[in-house]
Length: 287
Image 1 (cartoon, rainbow, N blue to C red):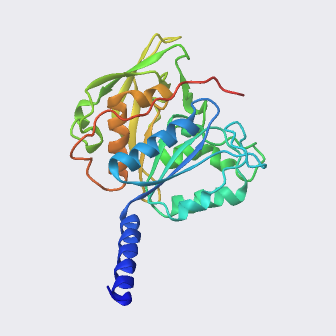
Image 2: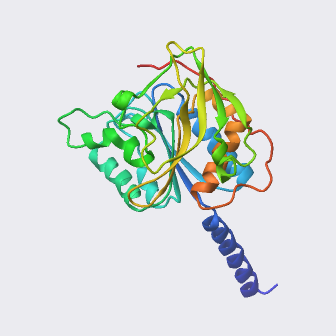
Image 3: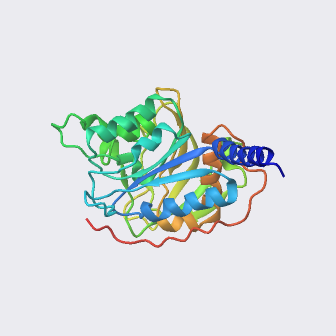
């Protein structure tokens, strides 16, 4: 074969590969928590989203100045520049104190109006001192996901580490795309977060409710997953589930995958590939 046609074919092949990669929605996971092993559950979820559903993903980690990954180090998550390219940002954070340069990248993402998802302690992602210029970010959960503005605010609490949660679909939302294929009732290890009566914030749409099992005090059912629309018009999904053992529960897996598709403005997958390979054990906090 003449060299020019061969070169043209090679160039065409490379172009097709690049175009194919460009067409895949890009999901950036921002991790860093002291208790729920998001640095292990989020990569496992990302890998399944790539392998089973064709997404392109990147996971960012809490990292010490010497380059060592350490979820207990609260002041650095390198790579947040990736948010500039992201089609969806997924947050699983707890009590971070990131520098202003990194918070500016998160701020830019929010103001872009692109969608976001949050798990569990993302409701209290940041914990700046009262005199810090970034203290407003302690209410991150409220303006990003419609959660209470930080742990303890507006009665934000839980029902004890020895409890777990029975989850039920809210009947009025049974046809919501988030719930396609999700069992009407299932059980997760997460202890239930108390957010009522002021939250979820106005404009939220709860789709699942949780009932505490073996609570350490008198408990009432609380919303456990909902949608929200940010002030910048972004689609937002939050769930207070996220204990590492939750990710091995198939109805929860389906909810999360549906949420990814919904956040990106896509229909849930027409065919479910079966239980995902996400098996992460719970480890006590280092703090």
